[in-house]
Length: 205
Ligand code: TYD
Image (tube, rainbow, N blue to C red):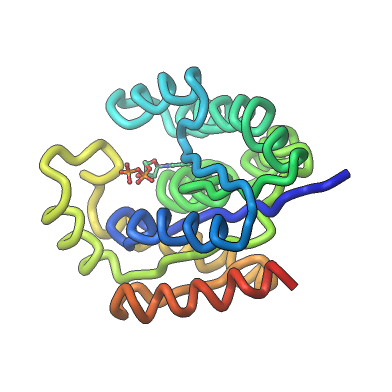
């Protein structure tokens, strides 16, 4: 069976991952692969409806984690797994690492519960490469304030929350160094993209 590659982009709000989404898609397309760009929470009609609730409706942290994973289950079954099976490259703006970072690190949801949901919901569908855009939360906040007129309820969180989210991302990356590629987002977009391309080349070998 032909299988494509699965790439996820991660980082705290304002770390600049979205800037690189389309250039990455172009890079892959230029090498002759079908590309599917998607996002979480979202990526399916139900997932996009759940995204509206998640970004704008306050809820208990465990509920938040469960809804994130409910949206993810639809995404994996209906979009990601079929695309990989037909050989497409899937590029997702966030995936399960975001739940460990935001719900686990930021909100304090039990890591044991998140790990259980991870193996249940993913069913073996794991990124081959995760690009972690790493930036100091104070700098990231400046970027969010500049680019976002109406911040959602995650973007409105304080620096302490984002410090915990960032630390949780870095802990995930330390535990899986072969999958993660950490990018220092304080550099220029051009410098970062050159490093992204090196990581992508590693996937084609
Ligand atoms: P984001 O990629 O930041 O969307 P946008 O760039 O349009 O603002 O994602 C929305 C928010 O969802 C982001 O603040 C992180 C949060 N999130 C979680 O808390 N847990 C998750 O599992 C996922 C996928 C996202």
